[in-house]
Figure 1: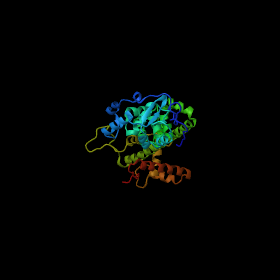
Figure 2: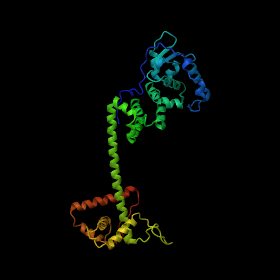
Figure 3: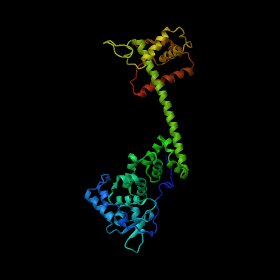
Length: 379
């Protein structure tokens, strides 16, 4: 499904704003820097670097040693970073730094529209490609947007992987779906779309759905269309599956019919009676029910076609067998040859109807993977 979302989720995850002038409120690094020990000691940190290298990058980021760039965030927050590191990890930030003009020793850029702590986690990742699992869980949607806007492919892939492997749920599904479309994440958008189709009733009751319905009515319309198409496909598949089961059951009934009249099934069980040492349970699944029908047919006084509902079913099975039987001359099933002769006198429409039914029965058994059974009850 190709849907173009022109804006980020309104009132939920606003987009990062373009660079703005330096705010008047200044928050110095010591007031906004989190404890380095907290990040280093946490066993939930995800990082491919060794401990010494990680400590060095953390110190460089937290202490802002010889930092030459100040990043302005929402609420007047500031984060001091190094232009050489940010410029190497993000081509967008590199271009912003080139355009930044300042008379002071430090250049400045702005990353606004997302929480200050989310920006801090994002910038820390640019230093060491490391993150804290709890912070990732809390700010993952903001990090997905930031990684796309500032072209940090590794962080973007990691956000997608984290969402696919557990952080995606019913409550944030619509938000993630819209962001996946906006941030060019086709795999994530496909996973979200499938989850929406499978859990549409629950998803349509969330707050995210109500916000999306007002902000992007065309997207809602497109989702509803795909939901209707998916429901129609499910119904069609269910109908076809049920039809195939009927054809398989008819084929099994034909097998059991040949078995009863050719072999004479005497071991219906073992639920019905105790088997002797030289007897084995019947291997035909339809044998028990069909034998009861055969016994009724043999003793019924109204077995003429139309006289008894059970006998009518038996007549239909006998005629169906004749359509599938390979050799009527050697067949032991009653009236098989008579039905063969009668079929030659039927009109073309009736004959075609029986041929189509016989073809579907044989094909359904082949599709099911079971071995083909010859319906000729030869001696």
